[in-house]
Image: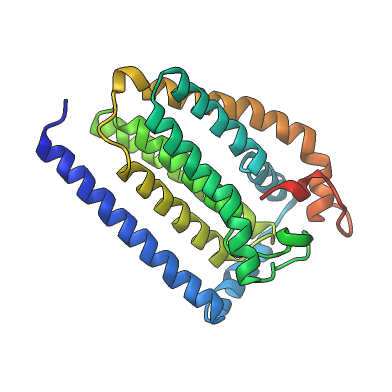
Length: 261
């Protein structure tokens, strides 16, 4: 059991995180809209291009497929189903709402800002770049899970969970820039927006019943679903993704990845 003082410190930290990430997202958005981020975007993108290799192409493509919208959707459904089964109604509703805001809100933001991508991979509403749906979805999903799981852990184990979630989020964000699907500012804005949504989600949750929610089991289910379905998705989509991103073949091709965020 945590004391009232400890709970108060947690809410203050969440307030600070929401304020910090929200303000940073607005600053990045302003830089994108005024094109002041373009020198930074071009420098980082060109630097990544200069270090490309077939081995790194394969690794980055695998990472980006593991962070696809379809994979995150399946993990989200599994998490919400678990929370509903455990009768954690408020947690389930908040988690589902957060991810629905990502799925529905990002396309609207992209169309509203109409920032072109570095490469013409996508058509329609997916042709626009800011903010990155991959980065936003990944940040919201795994930071929310890290928050839920870490509530049941000691400080040392909590740090391990947070570092693992941060590594997953950063890997997907970097892969999007490496594949020239997004500018660096796109993924930075997406990560900040995802973290803001997680902070808002956490602030809306009272001190939840750990015995009922069983957050460690929730985290294990999420990781197992991600590994199982994620690598099936990689295996089934890899060849078409190679053509889509033009990694080993000339040009690009229409494929099922058009439905990715």
